[in-house]
Structures are given as C-alpha cells and as structure tokens.
Image (cartoon, rainbow, N blue to C red; front, side):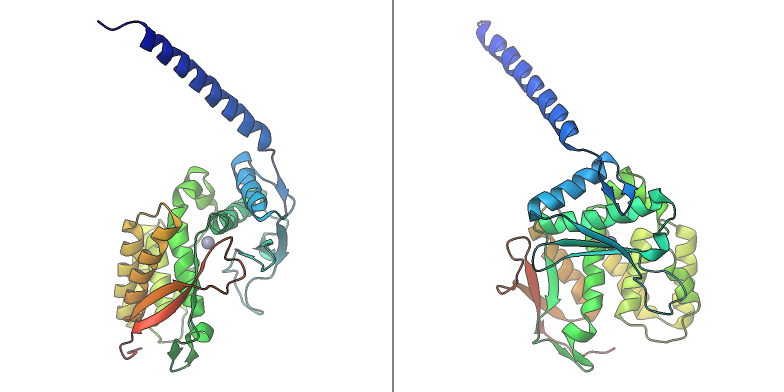
Length: 293
Ligand SMILES: [Zn+2]
C-alpha cells in the first residue's frame, strides 16, 4: 500500500506548476504591448515577433516604404524585403504600393518580413556563393546569387508557413502574380529562375486551377526542364522537417543539386560580420558537371 505523501507532493507540485504557468501567461501578455510600424498597428503576436528581433539585436528596427520593383516595372512583384546591416540593425522595407492602403494587408507584409528576421536572430543561416565558384557568364556571386536568395526564402517560407496560415496573413497576399508574367514572357530561357518560379507556384499559390494554367504555359513554351526540376524542388521542401538552424543546409544542398545539376558543399564564413547573430554559409562547387543550360 502506498502512503498518501507522494500524492500530496504531486498535488502541491501541480498547483505550483499551474500557478507558474498562469504567472508566465500573465507576464507574457503584459510585456507584449501592441506595437506600431509604418503607421500600422500590429497585432499582439506580430508585436512579439518585432520585440524578439529588436531585443536579440539590441537595436530598434528601421522600417520604410520604398519602391522595391525595378524602375518602369508595370506591376508590383516585390511586396517587402528585410535584412540586417553589419552594425546589427534590422531593416524592413515595404513596397510603396502599400502606402496608405489596406492596413491589414500591409501588416501581412510586415509580419512576413518579421518572420524572416526572426529566423536570422534565431541563428538560421544565409547562403552566399564563394568567389571560387565561376560560371560562363561570370562569378556565381554576381550572376547566380539571386537564385540562391530565392531558394533560401522559399525554404524559410516553409518553416514559418503555419504561423502565416494561423494568423490568416497568407490569404491576404496574392502571390499568383507570377502567372501574369509567365503569360507574356517573350524569352525562351528555361533557366534556374523559371525552375524556382515553378517550385514557388507549387508550394505557395494554394490554387490548383491557376497552377494548372501555369503548368500549361511551361509546357507550351517548352520549359520542360524547369517544370520537372521545379516539381522536384517543391517536393524536397514540402517533405522537409526543419526544427533548428542546422536542419537548413541539408535541405538547401539537395535543392541546389536539382537546380544546377551539380554538387555543392557549404562552410561557415569566418570573416562574416554578423556571425554572432547568424552564420553566413559559403557555397563551394564540389564536383562540377558541365553546365548544360
Ligand atoms: Zn519571404
């Protein structure tokens, strides 16, 4: 027969635990004061993301509306962007097309960029071509880096997809405007950018009908390689499980193999200025096959 003592201890422990939980809940509610950025009042969850970024960097964020698309661009394809300066200041930019418009939509763009920044301050890596990687058109760092940046963004979108969905922000931003661009594309490149655009459509559009139309365009233009590689990359990202910063590089490298049909390795850049915040991984070609496109 057991004595009553352990259960009393248990009850006491449970009560203490509960009161601790309540205390923590109350405390977190008290500290998450709603914040305002770019004249938009942020919800409490988004405010907490902003708080985390600023607290970890020890600096206030710098936010602004700017023209993010190329000059003379007819549409607005880039909604927001963000990065951390060498001095450790987070910069968040929203396209000027959002200025003075629907504040909930602007909040969605701000939230999205804060989730990218939050990954940075949590130590999630960025990737940069090493100067040793060269292509026929020049240094990979000059001519291919934008593809790497797009790929890393797509992997990060998968990491914070549930937060964008739970908050309803994903529904407020129309990401299918790439369809319009593909309809009128007058080039026949079938290149890495087309591959990534297709992967993005599979992963982020949430619209089977538009995806079907997009697929038809790729087939009509003869972009079969981009179509197939895009599907593969989308599947790698969709099936990935990323719970910590170290889980990113293996997924990134598998996608790079499909994207460039070559093998790469990555190593932390020891000279990187923000290495205390997050690692910058340098990309090296390990076994280059001849580029076939
Ligand atoms: Zn993004």
